[in-house]
Image (cartoon, rainbow, N blue to C red; front, side):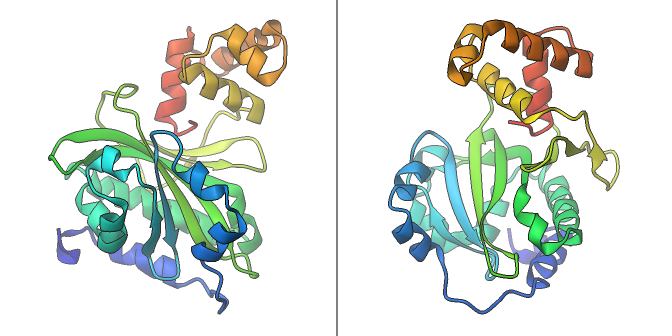
Length: 260
């Protein structure tokens, strides 16, 4: 897939990124890793693919070694091939909407005071193919890893997880979640705007994440050092907010809205 084959929004997204007035500084991911020796271990732990993207150049400066298991490409290959190549791996029925929601998300972030952009996490799910041409559904979560002195996002942390076993239906869902305040915005593809969604507390989102990983209410209580009754109360409140009837439906709701 060449640049010409990508939706027009691809160029528009690059223009949004380039519009940031980055400060001229030498900080990069190598310095970040050298100052945080445990970071490389963390980035390669678990099954998720981790990428660090330099927003100044729209290039990958780090790809975790488990990229081989996730997509069939080595980390070195993906660093060289870069962002544009990974877009070519997205399912043709998903790429246009993926680019549209990416543009909407970045327009939202750029409209914020520059000092506030680092407090938002974004997520989107889509289908992507591996080297053997087999598609899997993944959840991509983006978080600011490093900002310059002006607050511009310099390094973006991208975590891609296989959720094929959790979501079978087609269609993209996306969300912007504040890491500083409760509540989040979602994209459902019905128009070009993000919509306010049910405000779940940070604790409720923690509980949903554990439930999605298969923890029982008792095990969640042990992890969070609270009573099982407290977990049951939070679960009941979340079911009431969403008008759902069981934990399985609640977990699917959280996945479809990019909460986990």
